[in-house]
Image (cartoon, rainbow, N blue to C red; front, top):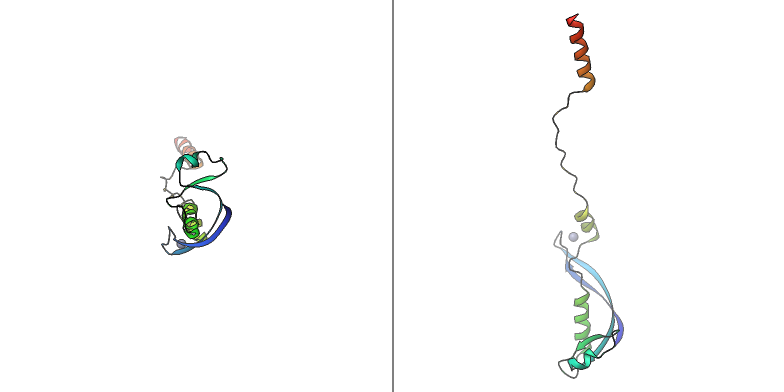
Length: 115
Ligand SMILES: [Zn+2]
């Protein structure tokens, strides 16, 4: 069996936890058999599909293939952008370094004073 399945499913956005539409498309190239031995002899191009009974409803096959095509996580495009944006490193306020020119000025002043 060969063909293409397209569907839009609802998943939970992993950032805002609201429903998000996930478009799925998967190309099927399946070889069916009730015997595991027969499946092993299928050409590599065919994805083996073990049948428990002689017939299987088409909807069941498509449902399983779509489940396999589901992404592990889903995000709204905007949520995904926010999720993967690099969090700016918190700016640690460094102790003020003495301005080298000021230090020079101070030295000059000291030199003058010692004069
Ligand atoms: Zn979201």
